Amino acid sequence: MKYLNYILIIVGAFVAIYAKAGANQNQFVLILGIVLLMIGVYRISKTIPSRKKDEDSGNSENEN
Image (cartoon, rainbow, N blue to C red; front, side):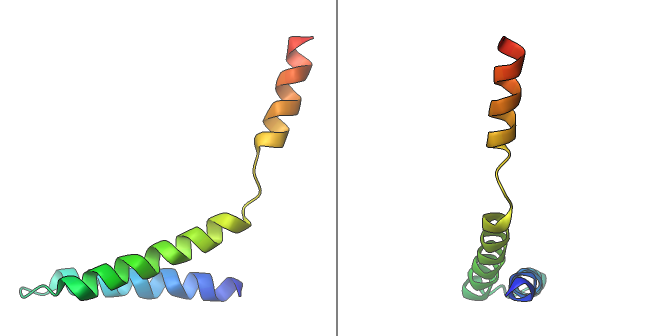
């Protein structure tokens, strides 16, 4: 599953660049590439743990 996210990002970026490179730009292909890119980034960002717990515990120690 982890590799699927990276593949989505790479394919999405490639499709977006390919759609942008042509003189006769196809907006549907550009939008599809951006959507694939954003889905991959979103899925990766869901797996990154939040640092809010660490920051909250660190702030409470400094206040005392």
